[in-house]
Image (cartoon, rainbow, N blue to C red; front, top):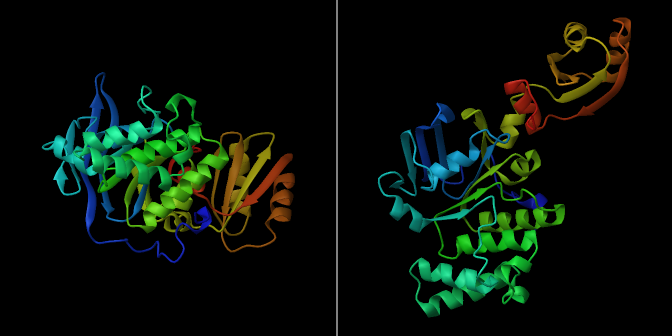
Length: 332
């Protein structure tokens, strides 16, 4: 398999993979009983052949959005089209052309690894011979052949997730949905799944995934939408989102004392500062086009009577973008 760092090798992330629409949401809204607004007037456009991500913290509305796109949740209002089909008007038709990998393990525990694939094929209209061939080929593709006869309760979390992806793809869906696909996986299994998704992408598979892992969104996605509290805050390529911060250096500063006052002091006195804000128990400083920052920050803080305990320096990340948009960390 290709190394996950080369998932987008040779691909221009600044251009859509295709001009053909795979998913369109217009003012998509879900309000649960108790006046709980889970998704708030969401507009999305996903092109065929791209990996599109929904990035946001737990509770942001990502799973509810996927539920509405895949017929599992009925929208309160708005319109959603998947593979050219109105999801609300024709849910049974939509189910035939999508593959869904749930966040939780929903494999049939009464069946073996191979049987989970075989019976899925039958369910989607394959005859017995076709489903046998498809199941056998899928085991090879997803490196599960040695565990074909195993009870699914005995396989690892990484294998179970690969089996879920294999099952979702068995009937050759137009769009593959993955809800937090690597949640709970160890780093090795996570990278293995990234490689699989990279190969699917290279083969032209349209994929929509949700994640709260910044690195995952950055590595995998052609484009992504950052959402919080059910609302879309920004949408662009990972590169475009990071450039939108307007800084090339991010300093995270720990200190004792009034951190809001420290943020204001640094904003005023550090040349090239585009933003300075308190984030939990730190001050985050966004700076553009300035070198030799550390001595200047230390000197300015000490002259202002602050005792610094730690400073870290990094380039902008998707978490920086989220903080820039919301004033809080993605994991809050």
